[in-house]
Length: 441
Ligand code: FAD
Image 1 (cartoon, protein in one colour):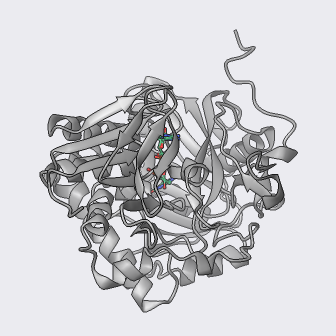
Image 2: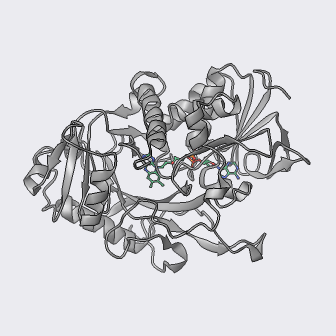
Image 3: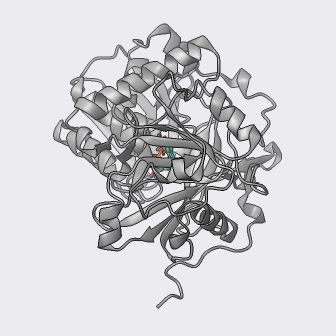
């Protein structure tokens, strides 16, 4: 049926991209929009339910001119939203960013990555004193062994993730979007197929939600709901918090993001609970199991929720702290979790109508850099639904199973880790996890 603002639109997944899509549909005047999710916003399994995320720096596209165009287009639209949209503006902290690397290989990658240069306004960091001087005295007390990097003081920084997602959902609801959330009533168990198209989705309570257009934005879980032809690799990363004192929180206010592309990153502690979040950096964990529904089809990486991280990941976090802030290296974690995203083969987003099912729109493939686009990504997803995407974006975001045929599931996808973790790891091999909150009374 022709698309009008009276069409029924169903969004599967109220995470980062689902909330953004709901907001943009509301703003474009769509009157019958429903979002389904097993959890109310912020879903504990959404990659966006997090204290903070980095606002993307540079391109993931290497030297390809069209991909660079796409990267810049996305970043411009996102930055415009962070700077000017009242829904997102309060959650943007333009504190600058430090990019660093240790090994020769990672340094080379950093320096070619459409990258930091003095001409582009970056300040080179070569010694431990250079690094220490980027933050107030007493923050970076480490030796920075072998580190080399760049510092950008403006135009980059971090965003409060959970609050941005909540803000988008709140505004979407105010504009009339309906959120149906709950383990039974919101969890999609299957899409509704007829012989030629997708007609909506069925939830775990057995309800059929018929729709004129169905937008799939279930993040790492999307591949379990629709055959993505190997274009998505559900992959998890690890994060941990440490609790800071009020005095420390004051000292740590307005810090630039510190990101070593093979060690990890942190941002200033959150203003509400003074928790400092960090991630150890590595090419990710998959969870390879046999697909019960298709035992002959080989293994699939199947996401699961866990509020612990592998002990080896804790050790990497502590090593990262020892190099940068050794005074915090032994402080207990107050929180940790694994966080799932999904990589396309080239880490470009997949935002497209499906070539065979005209009413299905895909908004997936965040590929580890999809959060900071929350102000604008929903607009691109709605553009795809309305056939209004710019040609170059359309080409980049297209349904592209040919690029995933015979996919190398162990491909590092442009990421690095420290020795021993410079590879895609498998949760099936992990025997020991942290026990935060379990026996610490
Ligand atoms: P999600 O936000 O994960 O949303 C998926 C939603 O689908 C969830 O709400 C879930 O509850 C719902 N769902 C699941 N199953 C079902 C079902 N059966 N029915 C209905 N709904 C369902 N990006 C950045 O830009 N900067 C960063 O610094 C950054 N850091 C990151 C750090 C970590 C540790 C991780 C894991 C990711 C990071 N990312 C970052 C990537 C970014 O978080 C993701 O790309 C982005 O959040 C993906 O959004 P999404 O909407 O696709 O998925």
